[in-house]
Length: 563
Ligand SMILES: Cc1cc2nc3c(=O)[nH]c(=O)nc-3n(C[C@H](O)[C@H](O)[C@H](O)COP(=O)(O)OP(=O)(O)OC[C@H]3O[C@@H](n4cnc5c(N)ncnc54)[C@H](O)[C@@H]3O)c2cc1C
Image (cartoon, rainbow, N blue to C red; front, side):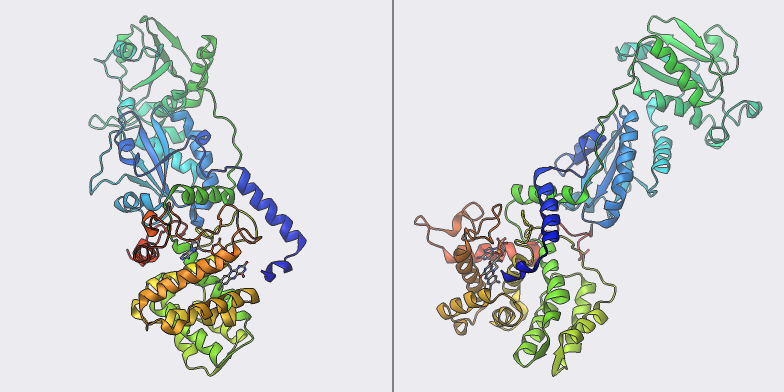
């Protein structure tokens, strides 16, 4: 089509680079090497019920800008949390996927990203949908997680009557139990004089009592830092008398290490801080030739656009044919803000087509209720006009829509694998097919009048107008009284035009111009001799283009418009 000839060489090169990157590099938003495991509706609940580890789950929608902004922070955080993988798994659930909607709804996900913490053995109840973590700062999130994790059995205080033999018995890979004395501040006020960092000293002052023997940060931090060593289990105690159990008298900064043979080793870190404790124990482990878990492979920062393209292509390849709201919104956005204002003057038939197009949008539109109100206001402001310039139209659109932003930024069903293909042209067809199927509230035949008027007056491509005119001669619109006939007329027109274009330079090799629908998507639409079965074609078109069956995939909002 001739509009493509105007693109500059530079933009062509840039686009080719962008597209080829998207095609060849299978970029992912969340890489397994970043310590992130992706869940879906089939794995979500069983994974949560799993007893071994707690979970941090990010509910996300890659098309939402807030999610996109948070991706680098979350990636760094999840890589750091790899040190805690023994007790905490990091997961993501994609709320933009239609198949995951039910779960996102049942967990009351109203915005993305949403972070929730789930303890091991979690079972969903109305009152417990996980613990929300609102911070978007990696250090703060880590510290909130630590405070939740310390309530796990793994952190239970070592008591006088306990002994460590069961640890060696139950976990054959464990070679050492490290016992860290952690004074309870409320019981041992003199400990204020020791070298604890202020933060570690005061963090859990209120929690430290017999009913709630939650450890303070120092023991907890030592434990968390040593999770990287499979051979070590850290147990924390706050009872002085436990020293007697080992036949020694308490001295400051003393670490007790018990090996699997029951032998004791005493280490004295230089300072009374978790960092010094960890450094001392690590020195010992190094001496004993034990290494921490291997670090994660280095990964490149996420290329969000390329990753979204991967997601979109995967969605199109693996799911039955769907019609996407995102394409309909892109079409409406582009028609209003780019295509229509190109017309120098709307008068006579052109003005009628413009008005009728807005009327259609006013009655049957897939838009957000807020956008529908804007369309209504635009429609009423244009209804009274006798003529209107493109510039005036642009101003009226701006006045009606103001700051409103359409919630789709990318084509989904109309995505192209190469530059300058598909996109808007594809979405224009999609929009009008949707109108024919949803035209219950408008006068019979009016969708096709708007469609043919739109092509005649507002499509720049002369060849397109010619092709549609030729089809109109073949199938005159005057015959079309009923809604079903409109649906089938547009379907036939589309197939007729695409038959002429199949195999040509405007065909996207990844999306060949077939006679629609394909055998695979609708096996019942053709009889044994491959002739169309009109009743089945109609049923199929009504099914895929009807409002309720539109896919939300590709929309920036996590929650459907109606809820
Ligand atoms: C009136 C008109 C004339 C055109 N003439 C030309 C031309 O001369 N030259 C040119 O290069 N381009 C022309 N185009 C654009 C062309 O038809 C395609 O829109 C464009 O090439 C993009 O093709 P596509 O592969 O994305 O699929 P499209 O043909 O745009 O189809 C869009 C989507 O609609 C669905 N679909 C396909 N066929 C049907 C059907 N029969 N019924 C219901 N749904 C269907 C599929 O989901 C498909 O992905 C014309 C467009 C219009 C509206």
